[in-house]
Length: 355
View 1 (cartoon, one colour):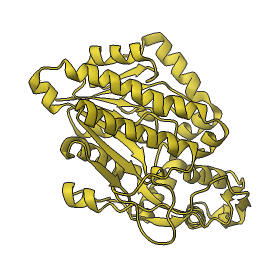
View 2 (view 1 turned 180 degrees about the horizontal axis):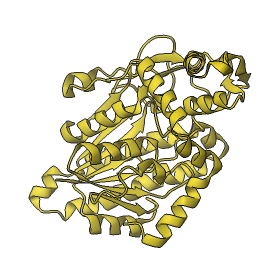
View 3 (view 1 turned 90 degrees about the horizontal axis):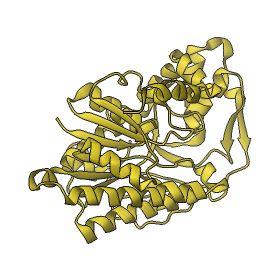
């Protein structure tokens, strides 16, 4: 039994990883999350009472608190997912992205290095620091080609620049100090428990409520889509078997234009909610955002060949599961859209503590 410290485990991807560890292994999970607007502990209610799960409300920029968490919980591995992640927000307010994604990663690396250096030889040999990043660090592609692990970094937004910086810090701490790290860069995730500022949940919920379905520009920007549970399985595999110092790109081999994604959601909703069909009538084109990257596409050959991973879901099966989840989990949706999930946290965790 290992103890896995997951930063950002109240977020979309982090919560999927935490649920898998508790549901499918005997490992312990320590969730370290500041609980910004995108952190939702109601995404973890299925595991919150499990004795192998602990929650620490801690800002990763707080060096003293991060050191305390390492000292008290004695993790065997760190999975670093905590990040400000919404591109639009990074354009209007980049400071938070610099602070969390760069300063926070530095603070976490230093805490991990100090902790790791004092472990006995056996525990030191198995310790891992897994940094989870994004394909956006590579910039934008034309109509051909794929991002590989050797693609040069060319970030174009404050968000992607901050994540690129964090990637470089992790690499430097490995090469300079010997910290045992692995890094992964993923394509666009989608699935249950996704905060509704992102494209797929936003479109689902807007369509259900008869609101406009906003699409930037002409809707011809292309993204590679990865179902979140497939991503979580890949992350666990890299943590267990990835080669130290290596980077693994994780993608779904599902390139779609934004317009195709929205049209696919509308088609599924036309089947499930025919009284509101056609949902595509709600599509609205809005002014494109500054610096909008043209295309992302990941070559996931390395992780397939080296570690034997491949996605279990196609875009079609994963999207249908996602739409069904949002339609059948109205309590979670209502809590997020109303902001009640934040009240729920303060009521429940102020009384019984965080660990």
